Length: 320
Image 1 (spheres, rainbow, N blue to C red):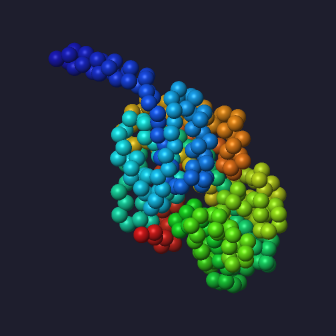
Image 2: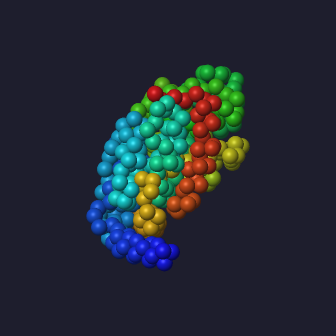
Image 3: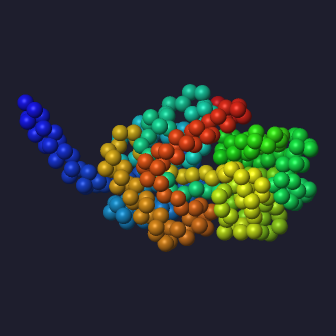
């Protein structure tokens, strides 16, 4: 009987092997949880052509915006776990939504198989030139001396810049009022007009205005300086070590997707991030390539959940 069971198991493995070897036999569809043109969409569209070359099959990008990424996440969480349906995940959607929304139909760990991290996108704190501060320390001191007088704009409630700035406020005992917008574009325009004193945004959103003298950048919240703003210090250099605010974009498959399929998709991402044209395009978009394997991405998600969810609870950030 034991011999028969071993024989049956061996036959099952042999039967499954051709299917895995042939993956993908049709186009892979990557769902982007936001409209076209944002950083998640840009990054996904930059890496998909070299991914397709590596996989030997088309990779299609489908935008499915709505509900702060929940529509797309819920759709992929319930998709067939065969590797043909992937989610382009954004860090704060993935780790923050579970505590910002009361009744979520998906879980970031239970319902997804990590495939690969693609990039991180550092953020910068900048002010209108009329604000009487030139450094991040002066900004903090000014905010403490004038509680509630300063405002800061972000791309929206529950975004990486929103949650990150709330952590910065909690850590430095300061009161600065959040002004959310529907996207970085309108947020930047209101700061340029002087309607809001400061902004937390990705580097490409503000770099040209900083270089033109229309905004004053105080610090880049990342480990290293950015080529887009090489003269702007990191937060650590500005006297605030540990303040790092890097949004990431990563691909996830539905849970129970076969590990061999996940590994093949992950390898295609790794190859795409070595493509010279893709690297140049990502650099122009202000995105820093940072490949993580499925196991490494799983650890990153766990670490980010442990780091950011208490911040969100303490700041009482709710979206629904």
